[in-house]
Image (cartoon, rainbow, N blue to C red; front, side):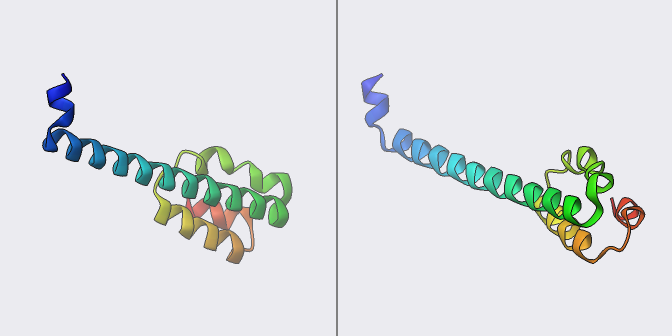
Length: 86
């Protein structure tokens, strides 16, 4: 087993796995940040009525789509407008 750990291939696989883990962690932090921003903006703009959309929004994992939703929260005039976007 120690021979395997010393193998250059093993070391490369280990580094790649660690890099992927860090990328996943960064994406998770971004996801949580965008979701938090959406929630804050919904609350500020539409009160509790806007927060009702969060159950649907929380299911979205695509960062680009969440960014678009955040932009639409800022520009939308009604909760119904946002529901059509979702």
